[in-house]
Each structure stands twice: as C-alpha cells, then as structure tokens.
Length: 428
Image (tube, rainbow, N blue to C red; front, side, top):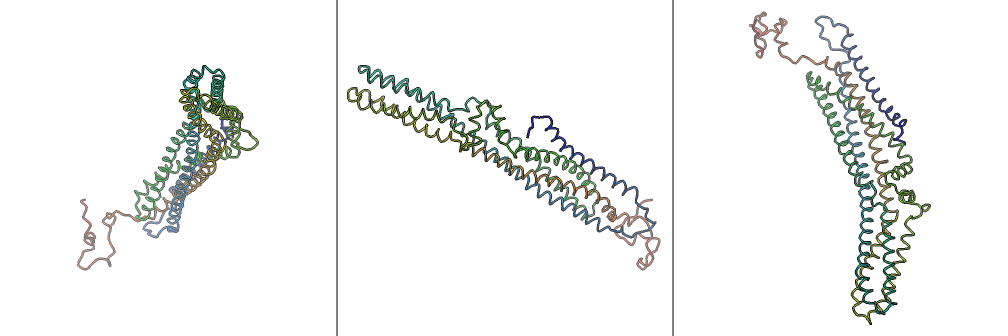
C-alpha cells in the first residue's frame, strides 16, 4: 500500500478503467442488439395477426432481469449500511482517542499550574514564616525544588501538545465525506428501485410511453452503476492492500505528520512487551519527587507548627495541593498506558478493515448485478414492447369493415360505426 507513489496510483486507475471498459462493451452490445432487432427483422405477411413466437419468454426474461436488479438493490442497501457502520466506528475511535489525548494535556496543564501556584504562594509564605529556623527553611526549599522538578517532569508527558495533526479534525473530515457518500448511494439505490418498479408496472399495464421513459432512465442508471463499480473496485483494492499490514504505513505517516519520536508511536500502535513505555522514567522520577515532598511536609508539620502556629495554614494548603497532584498523577499513569489508545487504534482498524471493506464488497456485488440486470432488461424491453396490443380505441373506429356474421340484425353492412356505441364518426 503506497498511495503516494505514481505507479500505485496508476494501478488503481487501471482498475477504474476496467469498469469503464465494461461500460463501453455493454453499451456496444446493447446498441448492436437493438440495431439488429430493429433493422434485421423479417417482414410480417400482410394481415398476419399471429403472435410473435417466444413472446412470453421475452417478457418473463425481462421481468426476471428486473427482479435480479431488485435483489441487487437489497444487497446494495445492506452494503451501504455496513460501510456506514465501519466508517462510524472509525470516527468514534478517533473521537475517543482525541478525548484521551485532550485529557492528558488538561491534566498536565492543571497539575503544573497548581504546583507553580503552590511554589509562588504557600512555599514562599512558609519560608518567610520559618526564617528564624534555618534548618526548617532548608526543608521548605527542598520541597520547593522537588515541586519544580515534578512540574518539569510532568510537562514532558503532554506529548501531543502542539502537534498539528488532530484526531478530531480527521474524524470530522471522515464523517463529512461519509455523509455525502451515503447520501449518493441512497439516491442511486432509490433511483434504480424506481426504474425497476416502474418498468415492471409498464410491462404489467403494457404502457409503451412508460417503458420508453424507463428505458432512458435505465441507460442513465446503467452508466452510474458501472461508474460506481469502478470506484468501489479501486477503493476495495486499495483498502485491502492497506489492511494487509497497516502498522508500518500508519507509523510512518503519523511520524511525518506529527514529528513525534518512533518510540512513542511504536508504544501506542503496537502495545506489546517488546516496546517499553517511553514515559516510564519521567513517571518514576515524578513519583519519587512527590513522595519526598510528602515526607518533607510531614516533617515540617511535626516540627514547625508547635513553634510557628502561622505555618499551619500554608502547610495545610500544600497538603491539599499535594493530594490533588497525586490524584492527577495516578490518572495520568492510567491514561498514558498504551491500552487505551491502542484499543482505539484497534477499533478504528476493525471498522475500516472489516465492516467498511465488507460493505464495499457488497456494494461491488450490487453494482455488478445492477449492470447485468439493466443490460438484460434493455435488450428485452424492445421485444416485449413489440408484443403490446394497440391501446388506442381509434384503431377499432378506423372505418374498416367488420365481417358480416358479426353484424347485428337490422344494421347495414356499410355502417360499421353503429356496432360500437363508443365510437364517433370522424369528419371527412
């Protein structure tokens, strides 16, 4: 799967061109058949009213072709639904991954700001209060250094901050394209269903004008079916190539778009024991620093509060900040583990490579059945049309003489119009 290479693009265009070739051949075959039917029929003897041999077979073959087309329409609706479900699963996975990455950035920002505020206010106040005792001031400054170290380590955990690639934007683009794709296929399916139903109605009512209109629409739907078949085939080929081994392509593409290191991307995309957590060192150092701050605050509370009661308020505020920081830290550890993002990655691949690809194959089958059924119906409609009896009652009132035995008593043979009360005499 190398869509950026010109040779691969040409290979997909060749698949589309094969569908165009199929359309051209089908149109040529239909044209040749219709020309042969219209121009090469043997002349009927005058006065012959015998039905065309095989007329019922022609009509039923046209009906069977249209019923096959209706079956293809049902397959198309199912394939369109499966494709839409797969793309929706892809969009949902991207949105969940975006939520996870945003939560990491938010927790890191909130924790760093809270620690910075504690360093600027509570620890500064505590150092001023404990200034008479240099050893206590040294302990407070040690807690300050540990808090600054934790803030520095946590800032490196927001690895997606400032990355130009946004999963939310990708999900919105995918949903936008899928919405129009789904709508286009629904319109195509409804149009073909309309053609099949009205053509069957025209055959049932033996309406020539309705069959003519449906013939023109059948040609249009035939062209659309072959065109959609080319796009579906090319998309299915490209998607199957991608799904055969998606990890290397996704890794390279994401690294080019984001500029992140291969260690981070491999950890989340592969998520196995062979790849270690790239943030493990930062997490370990942050955990140790938080433990040191906690022990230092406990020591200050035991020794400083009895001598400096005013130190109790900043110490309590620092302990509250430390508790919140530890809670955020545990959430960060859970979010930074590869399980969550890798689960989203797997869900996106399943939606794309299972449901969407299966739906594309059913849509391809729908297009193939539709093209074959419409081509067969277009070849059968002229023969079925030739079997339609005249619907205009003026044929019966054309002035031709009826046979003498059919005349009622008391009517002159020269007055055929009186035999049909619904006929009116035409002015000469």
